[in-house]
Image 1 (cartoon, rainbow, N blue to C red):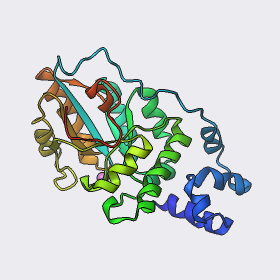
Image 2: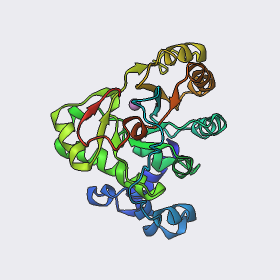
Image 3: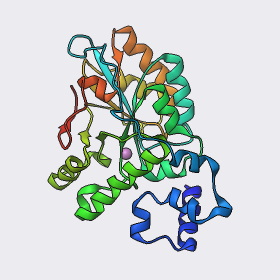
Image 4: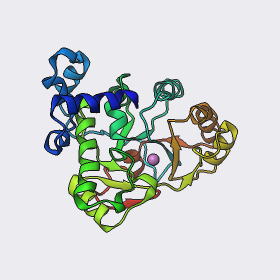
Length: 262
Ligand code: NI
């Protein structure tokens, strides 16, 4: 988060810390206003064309016919996320990442373009991991809208799913997600991996998934990344297929609606 604090300080120094300037994602505009500190990668990413129709789910798997599990990872991208992506590559498993906007803005590992290239799905987990029902309508719109924008800038995709931080949502949050074209994705299996930092415990809880489960994990914890190969092995042994959220439903889930499993 030191990098992000630095960016924020630079934005204030550059005089573009007004709500209107920050609203569009801020970071790339900052580069344009502070040429001495331009990150060529950021500039290139800002020019990424948005992929029409993304996330392009693989619909050759019908989760109403075969047993599917959707692994989901929240709160990143973080320092362990590239390692997790290596693991998922090796295991040939696709997952869904509910990312925090300010973590995306601070990421220097090009983690999101890598997720997109590997066929993972990315979802919106707000800008600052805010408890959304406690905010004004404008606050909810800003938390979700800025995250939509920064992900579009760095990865060239427009997200169609979101997960409210703490699973906390209400009618106003639902209305804003509907307006932004985002389905609300909760979960049916909670590994409690943020509390119990023991890979075997995380793996055992995740292995309780059944057909159509959405499993909640966090890629910001080393112990979770350590648990993933065991999670995948135990579920694959039982015949489960690993799918993204859009693949689980066989379509883009409906904007504004709340889902917890298939
Ligand atoms: Ni979270």
